[in-house]
Length: 87
Image 1: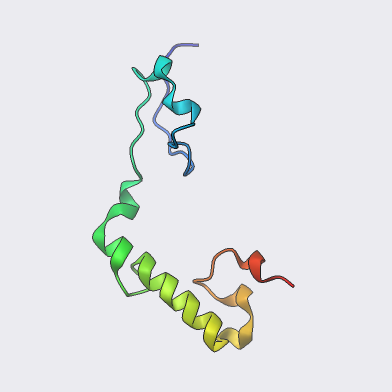
Image 2 (image 1 turned 180 degrees about the horizontal axis):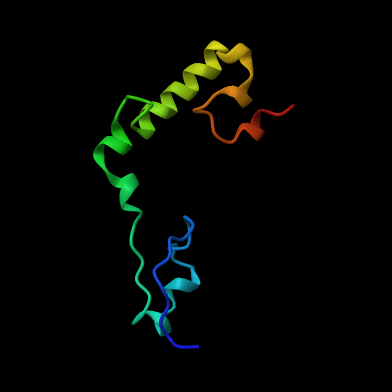
């Protein structure tokens, strides 16, 4: 196998300080970059839940507090980790 790898999208957390991808022995052929799509101003800060993460967080909270969707968290589109609501 050669020493070069192809470009891959990696799971979040692979760039953490203890990641094997930060091993100095592979730094000449391994580059870690942030996920640029989520770094845009609109993506992060827009209050519109169809565009931004901030808007989705707020809308998810509103849906839970107001009992939207008949109080069924599994139907709420902007609520993640729905398993946390299991009883």
